[in-house]
Length: 44
Image 1 (cartoon, helix red, strand yellow):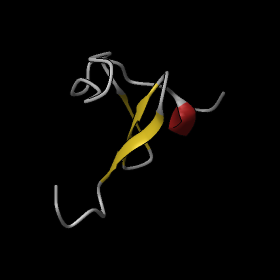
Image 2 (cartoon, helix red, strand yellow):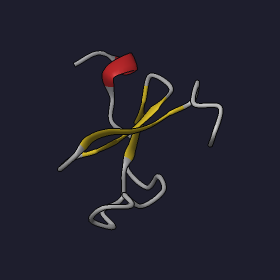
Image 3 (cartoon, helix red, strand yellow):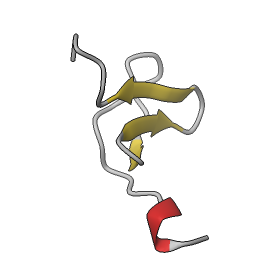
Image 4 (cartoon, helix red, strand yellow):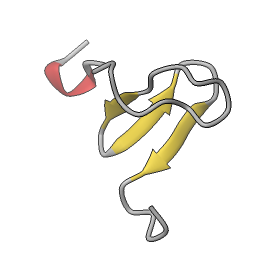
């Protein structure tokens, strides 16, 4: 795993399961549900 692939826990909670998401490449990813938030989302 490279430095750019490192998972950073402690992001916002997943809206489906309340698990802390991790940030990866401008996305917030839930370990259970996958990508939830993308920083290119205009509605966020």
